[in-house]
Image (cartoon, rainbow, N blue to C red; front, side):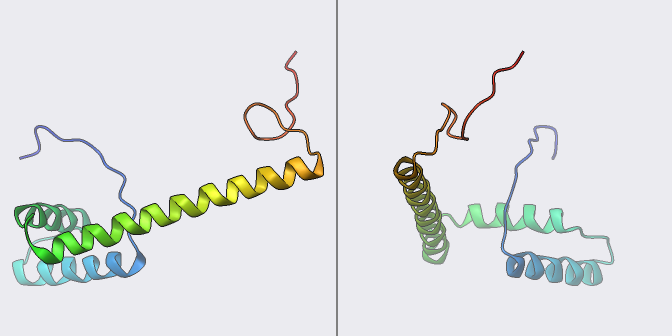
Length: 105
């Protein structure tokens, strides 16, 4: 089952994480086997992928995609506004955008 595995960073809201932990606890009790959060998340992903044409799954994907787009757009606006403020105030910036750079000796 795990011969072709890879690692993934998954960022979840605290609410989703708490619900997954509750499910892990319920599964541990029902199965009389230790069920970790990782096992629950892996199972949820696998089962969700089997229902790739389900309207609720597609709606969830859409909502998350829109949230990511909004956050990225807001971050770009913030960076642009900060650069504009720096240009107006005459703050020198290096090529990296992190301010003046010291020469290494």
